[in-house]
Length: 422
Image (cartoon, rainbow, N blue to C red; front, side, top):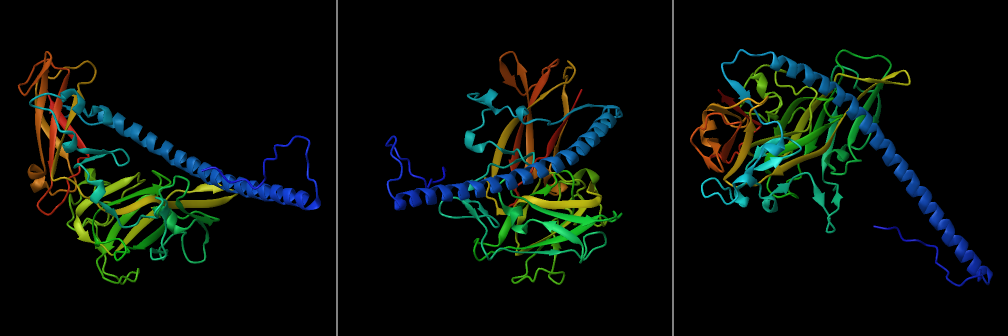
């Protein structure tokens, strides 16, 4: 929206102020506009400075993440122990429902298509946004996001490392972590003379204002660490106490309370950390955006442990930076079932004789219930038509995926699909 100008547009040529009152009015209007422009310039300068800082720090840790991924890919390329060749989901463009529109056997209704989350890179049941509700995001009648007084937060830094009482702290408001604006994020800079092997560690407490956000039942938590791929999420816990004090004395339960995929390293980052029997085994190191679906439970407070092991050097000081952005806790409503079709193309001009096995990666459902939450069909193409019968020599196959809600209401999350073929 354009700003309102105080200075009037005088359209009479060669006609200046005709008396002192007119002259003073014009000078006052010009002054007000100059002050407004000066203030706007300061605000823009601050926003640019914050955005530039975020870009620099995110870029630094993204570069480190890319190097790590390159090493991992090389290790996988040299791993040829499996008797099968493998394919997996690597891009959203593999979702190919459009090719089957009008097909009498494989067409998927638009209302039944599984949802793909671009931020968290997961496939979920079709969402019912109109009946879903956030517990941490509030908006006024004009649609602008607001932070109400009743949204309580607290920081506890009683840990080993550099983030301790008396440390030099440069921070933005904690409530910035709930805002959807890209130039507003919660950052906590801990500035010290010498680094520490323990890094910087902190607990973030958030009290859920259930009386203002409807039911206390929630089933989805999402957050984006700052800097992205540069912060460890040590644990995520919740309290069902009716009046939590936001301290260690509240009854805290791991969000992964049933210890799903206990000590299975491939599940790290796919299950909320802090629930495994091995302490620290499920810490999400250098975390990117994360989103966790879980059975609907009563949550009146959250406790999130963050850790920063790395630091940057600025003006001879060691600066440990961590924080969050776009955090949300939701009661996310979904359909009971949904489908999608994913295309897999053999690499390096290879051909597919037969699909031997399809393995879903679903980490919010117990292993014994995977067959309830997931089923599939393998589709081959023969000429211009599609068939369930294997077509030797195919360069591509399509996997029709069906996800079903569990009896306790858990909405399964498909993180990947491994296709073993010969």
